[in-house]
Length: 453
Image 1 (cartoon, rainbow, N blue to C red):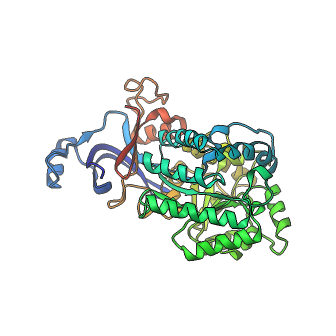
Image 2 (image 1 turned 45 degrees about the vertical axis):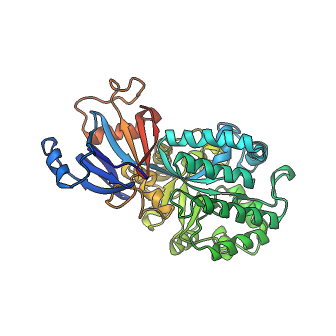
Image 3 (image 1 turned 180 degrees about the vertical axis):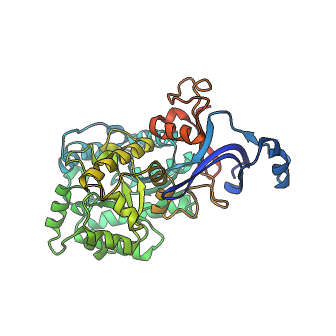
């Protein structure tokens, strides 16, 4: 059970895709991991009176944030390959399928060794917590034991996580693919059962169905996964979707009965409001309509989409937002140059500038508010968790970051702020120039899971 908390100071969170609420003087109270009060515009001289009026335990003291500190929601990473943590930075210049064969599969095969998996996954989860990621959708390797270890580590360290055994029974090297369809489905069921046994209410760790992509899954495997999804409508689903032209062409070549990936995955009952579709860079009007109708979520991975070979892949994020399609950010760190959601926000902004040029102004670039939304509340919507996390609405769980921007208080901080800066300016400077050194405390469900203090 998390201890009660009370903070007084600046709070910043998203109310919608284009509205960020900046509260200079907020009083936040957290009990049993949930926000029980968010009082706005409380003058410093009024804090004690307002706090006492809430009739809380006399042992609970208000923490006054220091100058340059503010609180934001924890970041949500909607697409992350945990086994790629140790291979980040490798394979530049390779197209996606060559990169998988030459770099990714050999590295992921190492997770057959449980001790290797334990060592890398422990460092991976710690690293993402340090960067303020309180919720993440993880692809595991194809190994059942390693995937169970990843789930155990997330639960022990307090990170909210979707964890899935990666399904792949064809078009992969013999040393790194499921023995057959039956084994792939059996190990998937075992991983689901294990995760449900360690966290029966999915308070932190949730199993997720994870067909890598259709290229690596035969019809029987996709059918079997769709049947599991039908029997378990609470299970989220994740896969790669329209990532690159090379991948799309290969997919449709293997499934000639379909003309697009939306119909393919829908046929196998793998598209629903619980589906998290990574990349979605090349989209037709028909496919976007299908995703909107089925309420699927998109994991936008702007760093990987512009780093792994295959072209400068600028997903139509503005059009997704116009259509009300759920969009969050993914680090996809093995395929890019950074595992930081802050960097993903910045790259999303850069890519949207390019998209504006590519569409002759039809798709205006993303705003700061929209990028921050995708990293927090938007990501929570993609994961169907926006009723629980994503902002500081009373009743939601307290997933939060304490951010410090004052160099005098933290010598290693690299964000240049000045005394006359408004809170809005300080916030913008952090989003555009800050990093994990600014993130001093990380909370999930009201529990401190990461701290630099």
